[in-house]
Image (cartoon, rainbow, N blue to C red):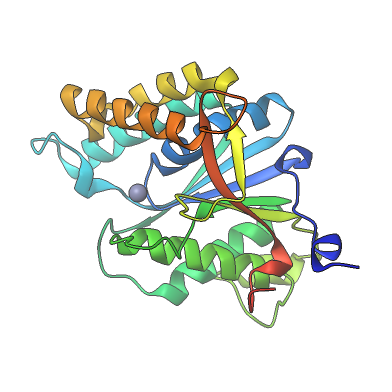
Length: 248
Ligand SMILES: [Zn+2]
């Protein structure tokens, strides 16, 4: 018997309900929009939870906070339509700002207990040279929330959600923006949708900035697919939820 036979790598394509926790409005789609679009077509419900208000990245400084927030949300809805996102949720923490890690973990725990996903996508908190604190906090809080979902002594931000919660199985987590992938998703069939979704994020990019981003994404997608039987890929670290502790 091997450890791998006990903690087999979960298959994202068996997921029915996927919670994708992202620091900013576009992270899920930049990192994993190709496979997420495939999972939605495969019948999974895609639920996005966005941690920060993302206001620091809005390029038009003349917009009021309200107008900028509306524009960001409209962009996100348009992209979500293309990818196949069923519901969007927001936590509204200040983008690149000061907020408490445990508040964030309590909020993510609430949504995991409320929505009962069987798969969770989030940034890899252990990405070497990740300099953006929102990404590290979000990835770690999502991983802890997956581990602690059933331990209701660890409270969420909503006591009613905690008391109504009945244990459920989270098959796995998929960490994106990772340097140690164990799963390269073949995104050839949804590459066009991914690019179309990315083009919706107009509030955060100038036209030239967007062109540059898409070029870099294309090169990266082709680079990670080298040695595979397909042209473009997305790298993920897919783990059994019990593999998030002590390196098991
Ligand atoms: Zn981000």
